[in-house]
Amino acid sequence: MGERDVTGDSLDDAASSAGSVALENRDGAVVLRVDGALDLALAPKLRRLAERAARLGPSLLVIDLTGVTFLASAGMAELVRAHRGPTASAPLRVVAAGRITLRPLQLTRLVDELAIYPSLSEALAP
Image (cartoon, rainbow, N blue to C red):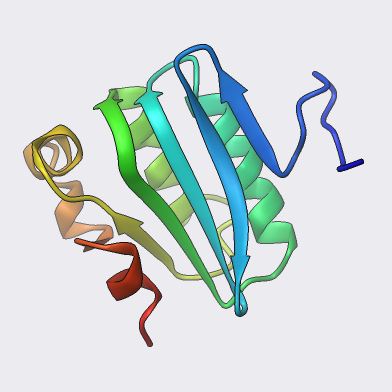
């Protein structure tokens, strides 16, 4: 049985009624796959798994937004926290393509701060 947080959620993956976040190890890199609406309900789960990923000491952290159906400001705040927050121990790459995820990042000019990649394979490339 996997490790669980104080709410009883697994630390390897987290879900809310609107979406989920899954943690995967990939040859020294950690990938957080986000599915559904990355909003106020799911953002805390992304934060917990990003903190968990940082404790694993990866060479790279990738947050894959390919499955995101809505990107709210709370979700974007967690991307910034993962990039420059107190637990940011590895370079962050964000997978975002298309209007739903890329457009809000462009409008808020986060594309100037975050490393944005169009696909997971490109984000994982050296």
